[in-house]
Image (tube, rainbow, N blue to C red; front, side, top):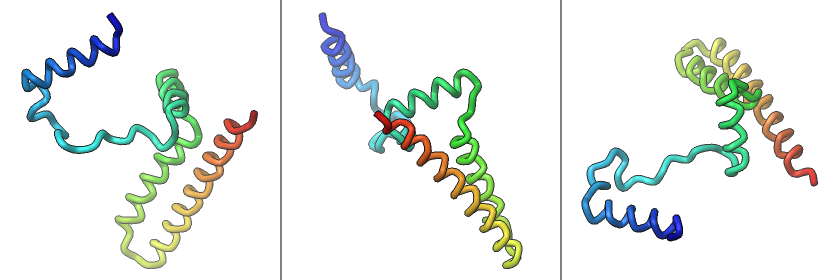
Length: 107
């Protein structure tokens, strides 16, 4: 028996029995698992499991942290300084992403 048939059978059986009702997120689209394609996502997952964090991911985390700092800043001069920091992080992240894309697109 093919795996696809077997899995489809069990999914349909669970639907008939109502096992998919009242689940968290019911009726909503599945969350996006990453910004790139499947191969990139697998690569990032393998690196994360090995304890290696790519510079691109570090910069993504730094960007999120800097956005929080910017949102908490009220002083116009301080906001300008924080915006410059955010722009620098975003630029460095974009450079890392472009370098990765160029590396993987080479044949």
